Each structure stands twice: as structure tokens, then as C-alpha cells.
Image (cartoon, rainbow, N blue to C red; front, side):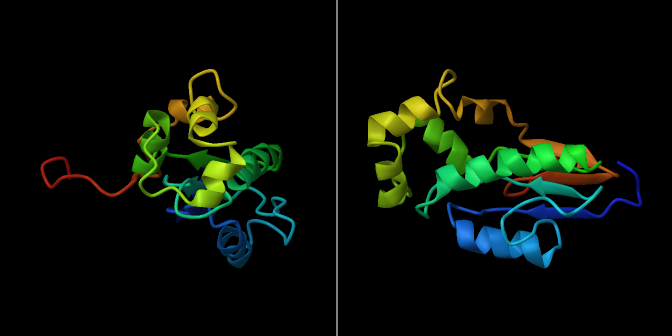
Length: 147
């Protein structure tokens, strides 16, 4: 990406739609409706969109819409894989908000939604790390050996 593009990293949204929208607006990436206004800016979402809050589905859907709009405006939204997405693939519910489980129609519905053939199966294709403009973006860091 061009060095003139604004570059943002936001992680651990954890199903908190209202605060996610506030973060995007504070960065001038979206308007109050969640529509992209960031032009050629690049947002790296470093994982953990799901769990802990009740609005993971809405947040995932919003990020898909924002990515499409960002690309149309010459920017981008890149999502990385976090450990909570991996737990969703495995059906682990220890940190999952009750409202999120209910939004999928129960534990089995959530597991199916994150399966490779489910509506959120695309999340399985996210990278775990990316380098942009000589900066490494990753969820939860790297070991000193790799650093």
C-alpha cells in the first residue's frame, strides 16, 4: 500500500458492535451507519471479532460490507485470524456470550455457521499474520525467537 495511505490496526472487537463503530468513527473510517468514509485508508483487524459480546454476527457482516466499500474507495480492510475465531471453528464456547450463541440458534447452529460450508466459513481463510509497509501485524504477538 502507498505510504500516503493511512494505516490503522484494531483488534479484539469481541462482539461489541457499539464500541467497534465508535472506534471506526474516531479513526474517520466510517460514518455513524458504519459506511466506509476512509478513502484509501487501510484497516487491519487483528482478530477476535467473536465471543464475549452478543453482536458477533452483526460485526462480521459489518466488516464484510466495510471491506467492499473500502476497496471501492481505493482502501482496504484486512482481517486476521484470532484465537477466538479458532475456538469458534472447534465449537468451544467457554468465552462465548449467551446472546451470540442464541443468535445462531444454539451451539450447533454456531458450529455450523463457522464450518467450511457455513455462512461464516470464509473466516477460516484469514491469514494469521501480514506484513504491510515493513510492519508485521499479528494477533497476540510472536515469540522472541521469531521476532
